[in-house]
Image (cartoon, rainbow over all chains, first blue to last red; front, side):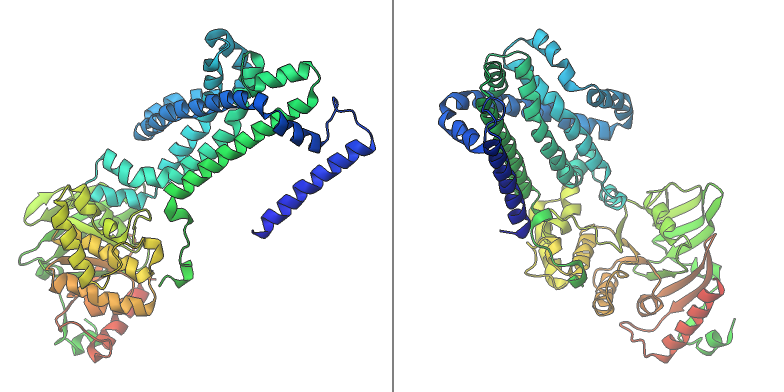
Length: 256
Length: 268
């Protein structure tokens, strides 16, 4: 294990230790702030209750990601191929970011109902922006010399896209996706808060109303775990797909 | 004509412009002009590359050599002038010339072989045939055994060799070289210079090369053209008739080096 990991683990343990200690010393009641050990215990012992709802939330997030990808990737390509389309659409893209998506959550529930659809759309809308913008930026970052080389080889747009621009943009795409999956969970949960019959967000509202604070925290713990797992899956995919970026390289100075 | 040039008129001769335009040419440029806003890069620039000839352009940096290549390949449109390819007027020779530059421009996600085969792949050439050709070139240029390595796993010299294979995979008669070796160290550069000679001697290419390395120019050129900057003009032409490969200890080349250096310094 590398040293930075040791330090961050130590910091987390210290924080949890102080939390536990402070709660016990000041005898804070469980419904105000439960101790970490209790949260962990509840998160494990009540997993039969939590797991099905976590599954629903995870499904919402995953479907949201897939829908987002299905729209964002073609759109980024279209915007790159036709700068006029980019100019026309960029106000909408920026607006989709400027309007807090959470503010439209109640509307989505009105339009799409209490089922999964409104939550899926929440997650999708949130991920959409970082993916589109990063992918477009990735395409644009391709050096002019490489594009000239492809032009001289007689490559058409799709050949350039497949052989040059897409692999070139992949690291940017994954950067966007990592940001996206981290916030997508938040989108789905907020959708569930507003109105739902299932999901971790729905559970949290129920527990909160009954002052079952330890269960609220347990749900949060599950959510965080989901976010972290998603993040690592994307990181793993990135490592698999963008291999040339991560494998050991000969140092620049020893190249000649 | 100055003293040094006179002394060695046997090994190299100074030619006036109309002399070089005689005979067959593969590429001919007449009165080429290019301006960017108020800045005149090229004005009435003339140039001839003879079939299987090795023409080297040398000049102060920023004199417009790379713009000339951009005009020739059609990356930048010309303002005025004519480009003739095998006696035919053309807009540019972007579809007739392979282009190799200082940067190897290898794609990091492809192996060396895949990189070298890109021109064939994009041109939808027969895969088996082009792979046989590429593997043969790998053998020839000392890259055998490294076909499946990715560019970041090999040395700068090998990367540039691979770029050279890619250049040869274009089935074009003319090769444009824009300082192809200037990013390499002296030892690697020396070994690659002999490979550049192969382009001419074994592959029958016509070569137009830009460099700012005088020795490299003297070792490789059949015709050496010294340029002035802003706007770029031909300062002097030298025809070098001595056989290749050459060595820099040739007294004629040593004198000529001094002479070219003087010409270049006058322009500063």
